[in-house]
Amino acid sequence: MRNSIGSRVRQGIDWLEAAADLAGNGLGMLRRLSEAVGALVVVSAVTIATMPTLRDSTVGFVRGWFVPEAQAARLRSLSQPDTDEAVAATAHEALTGTVRWVHLEPAEASVAQYLSRRYHVADEAVRPLVLAAREAGRESQLDPLLILAVMAVESSLNPFAESPVGAQGLMQVMTSVHSTRFELDGDQFTALEPVANIRVGSAILSDSIRRGGSVERGLQLYVGAGNLQGDGGYAGRVMAEMARLKMAAAGNVTAALASGATGARADSRAVGNAQSAPANAVASSS
Image 1 (cartoon, one colour):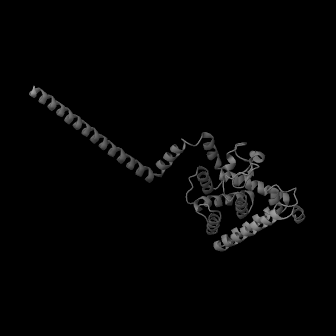
Image 2 (cartoon, one colour):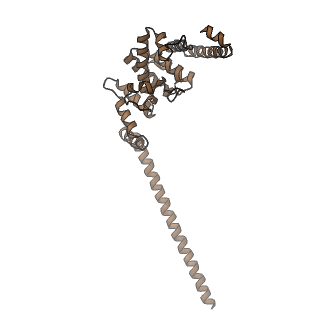
Image 3 (cartoon, helix red, strand yellow):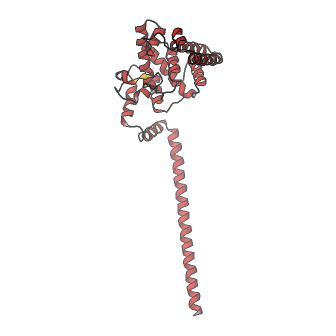
């Protein structure tokens, strides 16, 4: 009887030892497998990072999971035959969110620095906009600083800005009115693509100036105040911002920022006075 019990106990111990050995072997195999997978991931990451072609194709493959075909078609159609190669590449990066460091001329770099600091936007995100404004200015025969000034006043460089009346993007283009100017007519997302918005907005601004006969009158037409007695100070704000951009382009970024802060306080006081003034006083002042 005692021997039988001892035999069963011994069998139980043997089973426990066998199970422990099996579990230990399984954990060892899992550990070795995880080490192999980790090594493979590291090697793959290093390979992708050091081979530009493989890196680009991998990024494109992953991005294809999230970017619909219509959006991809818009990106492919962006690079026009007459567009400078560097601008086309930057446009693609700006639209896909893969903005990299963009080379600018010294004056343009100073302008980008000013805009970045004044409107609290990353310099890496502002630089492609400055480059796109240069190209749009060439196409529409406008001063790029005027284009940037309109962008600053209209949206504070927010590419996703939208007004209560439906104006969209950096230059607050009325998509419902100007849908045919975009590459994909009637597509509501095209106006939010930075470079497309800059191109269309610049073309509209150029037409407005040509019809108005002067920059100031063109700005009034652009903002939709052509039939009004005043534009609420819009043209003046744009011209003041353009003057600060010229100051920054000359290398006086700090002075331009100081001037912008003073101008912002003056605008706030003017708005406050207009809101507190009697209705007849406001009407007579306009």
